Structure formats: C-alpha cells, structure tokens
Image (cartoon, rainbow, N blue to C red):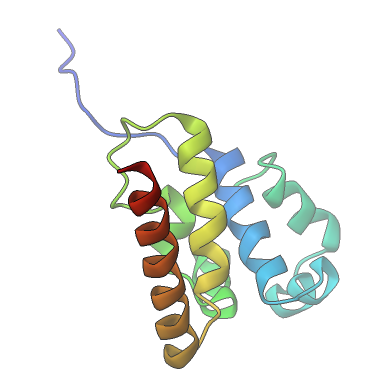
Length: 126
C-alpha cells in the first residue's frame, strides 16, 4: 500500500512564466539571458514556455542573473496558500516579479503607493 504524500509537483509553465516576467522586468532580452546562461535562445524560450526544465546548475545561474530565489523560480511565492484561483495567483506573480529588480528606495515608494491605493479603495467601499 502506497503512502499518500502532500508534495507538490513543479509546474513548468508557471516556472517559465516567472522567469519570463522577471527577465522582461529587468529589460533583458532572451538572447542576453541565453548568453549569460551559456545556452541557446531556443532553450531559454523552451524554459519560458514550460516545454523544458532546468538543471540545478542552470537554476542556480538563473537565480543569480534574475535576482530571484531558486524557491521562487521553482514554486512561486510561498506566501500564497494555494487556495487562490489561478487568475489571482498569476496577477500576484506579475506584480511581485518586477519588484525584485527594484532598489530599497524604489520598493519603499511602491509600498507607499500600494497603501494609498488600497486605502482609497477601502474608503470608497465603506
């Protein structure tokens, strides 16, 4: 009798989307990323489309080049409970990815903008 585990599988399409979102956020071409990784542009495209996975070495390089944790590249934001609908999860990834390229000062500005925005929405609903 097999024991059931709650381990998640890697979703290559979501992983590829996180990589592409960050690459675009830091204004890096697919060709430039391929050159830095030492792979072909076609291979990077295959990763971004979720058609291919990556070796540990390539994951490590991606993490350094894109300034993302390997955990984020593989599984996404761990703060997400997994109970959210896919559209909400995708939107959060698209917001968070580009922010990882920001400086501390830029992040502080974005934090303030987000607070004002949310306060404005909540205030209108009351």
